[in-house]
Length: 159
Ligand code: DLZ
Figure 1 (cartoon, rainbow, N blue to C red):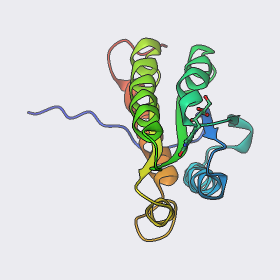
Figure 2: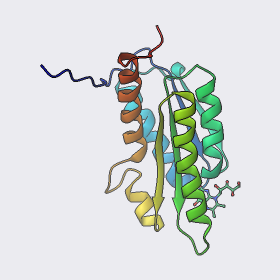
Figure 3: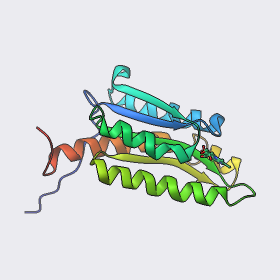
Figure 4: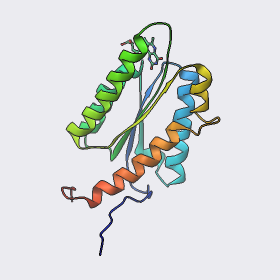
């Protein structure tokens, strides 16, 4: 008999951190709305959600790591919007943000979810923040719920 372990989407009693980049705030704000909508629909209490705002996506990993290290969050959602411009900035920031979030998650053992939109232009970014292509904030929150519940069942879980 195959044993399959997977996380549910139950949110009651779970505590979430959200790190939100202020850059491209018009779109980033929609990611936050999407994430909060998903968490609330799954019975996460507002009092169990902490939102931390940082200047840009470059700063997300450090703030997310601090939240993860605090031991006060079952998962941390990393939300930001990177739009390719005329300079190589985009590639540097996107690569380091992705690496940084992955690293911090592995180091702390806390699920850090990658909800940073990387888009070629504003239209693509808007599409991924609640228009044509879903909402990456909502998706990150669902993944966070699932991972938080999954980790409770895997070896090494506290309690
Ligand atoms: C500088 C910069 C640029 C050009 N573009 C973006 C972007 O599209 N999305 C984003 O989240 N942040 C951007 N930033 C800001 C950097 O992430 C960072 O905040 C600054 O370089 C200061 O360290």
